[in-house]
Image 1 (tube, rainbow, N blue to C red):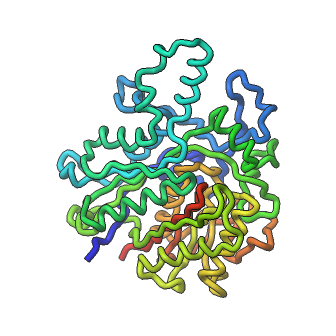
Image 2: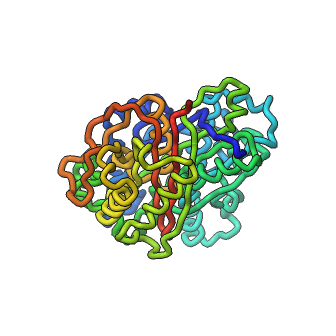
Image 3: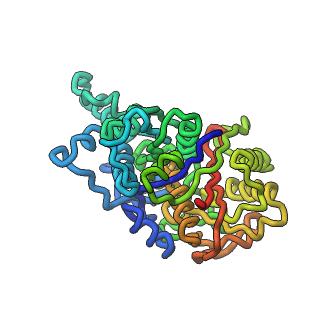
Length: 417
């Protein structure tokens, strides 16, 4: 019989707060973390169609004298490591007394070390000195630098892998971490999602793709508005979320606090388009159905959905079509919210942060508001979406994530009992 998998620790670095207490308090308050980008060095911001983002302005990693690991990696991996440290501490794990071979790391990363990548490329072409490229350039920009540095920092000798599926990366990372425990490959997994790519080139690329919000540039806090008639693109963000997953047997043996159970997971491909979801929403619905089947949960048992809801015109409508296809008339009884309304789209980190919000919701029977939901789009409107926090006894939740490359991922979380 496959092991049950539970969440025993969490950590977060986000535009609305670093650390779970600050993040959750701000989320329930409906605080926006979106602000204006002051500059990209000498590049004039006027050349960018969008000039706002969910920035973690208060992030200050320890210096090399305090912690040797942070100085070895790019900003995104520093955020991942900070979130992982909080999650380990929150879980009460004492790694030195655990079997290192039974602790693994699974990371979800969309873009990776783009800050160093852009900087070193610019320097190479500006100064024509190949021998002056940073000696740690290669290990820093590889997508597995976050999972690698976390494994080094905590001595984790179990599975050490990175999943990169754009916007759904960390949902897949959590899902695969769960599977590692189910299959008996590990007792504990550090599942983390991270991205920090608010850089001149990446931001210009998303602007050229016409994916970013261009309205409300003078009112940044109003720009991320999932399901609202006034939405016109997503707001880019940065951050990291980390969760400690354990087998129930292992968590029970050490009397760990349990936030929620990771009960099911599914991954599919639409094989349709690199950026745009298929308009009928049927593959999204199929993914939710497969995740529920994996969890042995009936759609009638679902109380809450943390939606992918990026605030794009097509994406939000398609997701709602998928929800209606799965839940039918009962869709009106399900609470739905969008964490991205608060912090923007943190790319590879978004699924992990949404899972943290959902786990807290199950634990505390309250969900945070979807802010800027002031003029509901009739194509997206559901009774369970609200601009205010909502209290309800919650038993089962879905966390949705749909990424570039035509891929879908869904987690099923259950209140632990």
